[in-house]
Amino acid sequence: MPSSAFEAVEALVRLCPPPAAPTPPSATDWAAKEGELGFRLPDDYKRLCDAYGPGSFGDFIGIRHPLGATDWMSLTGPMATIVERQLEVDRAGGTLVPHDPRRLFAVGVTDNGQYLFWVTEPQDAPDRWRIVVHDARGPRWFSFDGGLVAFLAAVLGGRTRVPLFPDGLLDEGVCFTPSPELRPGDEPRIVTVTGTARHGRTLSTDALRVWARANGYELPPRGRIPLRVRTAWERAHPEG
Image (tube, rainbow, N blue to C red):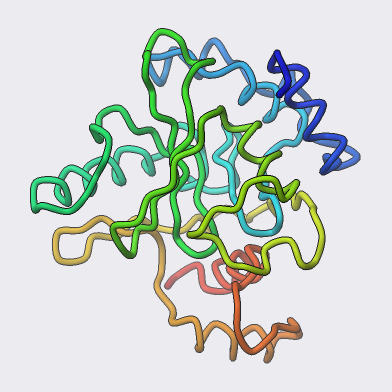
């Protein structure tokens, strides 16, 4: 396993090259972002963001970024707080939550609705934080003994299988897809349904497939719907 954040990111870059013109490192004021969050961030995460910019891995795993295209995918946006509160409600109701929700920080989300968390312990040693994955549609959790970049490299390299992820995740190869630039007003909204905070406008998977095919997107009859298609639908329906 790489012994430093630099080596970890370099290993991921060899496996999954970043875009030719990623967001320049100077675009992110890390000290300001950490001050806004109230805690330091893992070095591997900062190097990852500088190397790749906002986007998703495997057209499936979206990573929150300081320059995320929407409030939901921005590192300092509302996702972490909303998910934390829902986990607290779930835990109080008897649902399995293996970690204190106050120690979980959502750093990513998949196309299928699984959340990636840092377990922020020890809080003053972010480079020791490990990753857990939670299926928001049920009580299943997956733990990885390592940081975010090591997790991405292990999953995309086929060395670690996350049971919550689709079996065909790597069938089309490994790639990084930059987030498309959104127009003003295209950002998904945060809505509340029966007391539970949920993200964005809702559309059934079948209906989304119908819309996608009608608009020129080729999709298989089953399996995950690529992030680019979901984003395109969001852009086409800014008013819900």
